[in-house]
Length: 82
Image (tube, rainbow, N blue to C red; front, side, top):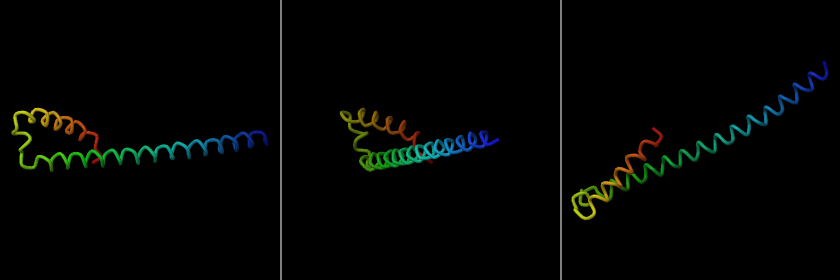
């Protein structure tokens, strides 16, 4: 009986450490995702601020590039936290 208690106690302690490590890693990943979402939001705001008058889109030489950048930003917007 004492052996079973010792084994179960050991398993409980090991499980506690494992759960604590998983929770810690999960919190770090949540922080990373939040920072990435904030960076995407900031880029989206800045991109809209740059072309608030539509002058880049209307320019023939730079318009195609700006359009491609906006497509990339739209793809990134799908990864934001809502």
